[in-house]
Image (cartoon, rainbow over all chains, first blue to last red; front, side):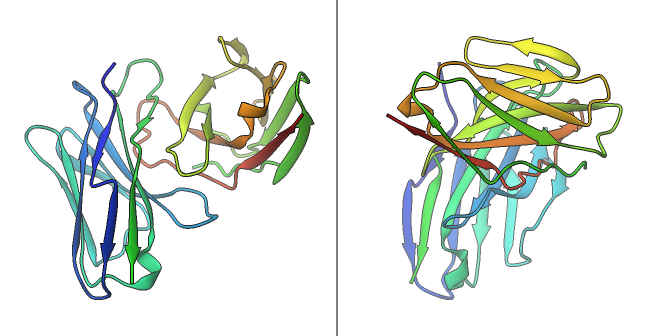
Length: 114
Length: 111
């Protein structure tokens, strides 16, 4: 079965650079979530989209922005990168209203800021 | 969103049954209880979800008392590969865009 795809899987950037993370949800899923997980930390909700519209925001820094496109893929744009942005970034997708809004997570993008 | 509280860590041995309890005193009427499992450097994986009483699937059981202020995830006959972090989440099933992962339970299964 198709799973959530994230690219790139690994990314190394310098401080103050920008980064773009991509997420391709499971086909027919209408909701995308982004999470940040620092070393030894629990996943922190950043932002979510339902039917291409932003649905909720969590602890997402102003330096970050995200959007969901017409084909339902989503991109997380990160600017003015800081050392503290080094983390695993997970994308998850779900289909609302069926089976309990179970979220399916991608393999993550490991971002390292030097 | 209801706050959840779980034990920070638990130890077990292979073949034993493991029960992880989550407290959610402020659970709302429309809230469901969902458990996820996470291995290092992997995304969380859905285990089970329930509203009340007992739910069972091929990997776990979820026990929810009548007052719904707590829930217990039961893993039968654990193996070494069940060593992971387990998260309890509480939220509205149909409106749950904002998902809050609290501090999970780190389960260590020993041989």
